[in-house]
Image 1 (cartoon, helix red, strand yellow):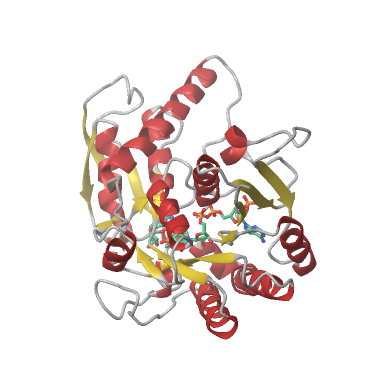
Image 2: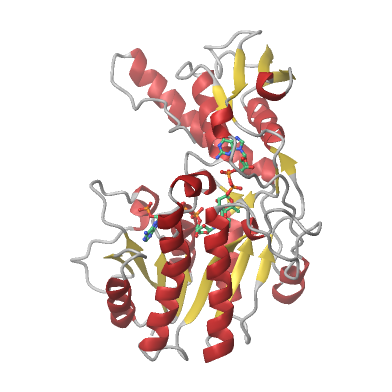
Length: 376
Ligand code: NDP
Ligand code: GDR
């Protein structure tokens, strides 16, 4: 009998990589998908299985982390060996605009799952993984941040995730459940949502090179992050549920870079040399050389392609994050395999391919999706 895993947030970046990973390991993978007016399964379409097929290994259930009876019914039906709670309103800036909804999904949603496991008598069977976050460290109290570093959340998102962290610890201690937190630092990929900063940068600069957009608008370019690749991080999520005892781990690379540095890497991948001039709100990224006119036919030296827009500053910011993954390496043998530079190159390659396709369609008079970035 293959093991059964249930994943909330299966249509998201991590959910899609984790589902692939578990299918390769022979799991029967179930996922909770929100009802939407479009399919919204682009990230898992390549592993989708027709529900009419016998012995389905990949099954989607309609559900929502705000709906207790729905979650309880799905868990009862699936009887999962492992439950990965990856579903969340995961955008920090958006959480300032929708704080109550963020708390309902990210904090109480976690409680709903834990309580359903307990209530259904699955506390000894179902192992629970909670997608905790480096945002818990917020206003950092120690450098680098490790499992023992005190928390100081700086957003409604982080405050909601703080509740989720502690309720996971509490169910482990109170009911002996195998429940644990992965305190994951930022991780990205070509499947990253378009409004997180790395993907916003790779997508916008590829579009600009191909003449589909004029300028990339950013907020705080001095922010420092410890960026890894989502593929490395989902392997760790699985590893955490395979131990004898449940434990919480920091997952990070141990290196940090600025948002500006990520812009420079992206430009370099596209053969564009950039110089930053000015300060604060007047800072601009100006093109100083173009290596390959075939990649960037729409650009010329002197073009301003990066500007600061105050709308992208957050009411309270997390300026710097740097994780210490020593415990994960020592206990689980986990080390990240993909460098941030290699990840940036992979993201740029995919976004450039899409931009080229759209530029070609546009040149032949076809309508293409507008190159918007949603004000985030
Ligand atoms: P994404 O934003 O890509 O995916 C979030 C997923 O949650 C999507 O499938 C989304 O569905 C689903 N979701 C949102 N709201 C609900 C709801 N009300 N009910 C059910 N499902 C819902 O996030 P990531 O894959 O990047 O991250 C996975 C988890 O890890 C999140 O909990 C995030 O907070 C956390 N995390 C992420 C880090 C990162 O750097 N990526 C770092 C640390 C933690 P839909 O597709 O319908 O929107
Ligand atoms: P973060 O990721 O808030 O760390 O949360 P994001 O990529 O959104 O921001 C990283 C840093 O870049 C700065 N920034 C901008 N961010 C966005 N989105 N858009 C901009 O235009 C922009 N300009 C500068 C931000 O201010 C910030 O400092 C992510 C999410 O995946 C969370 O769910 C997860 O918990 C944490 O990572 C770890």
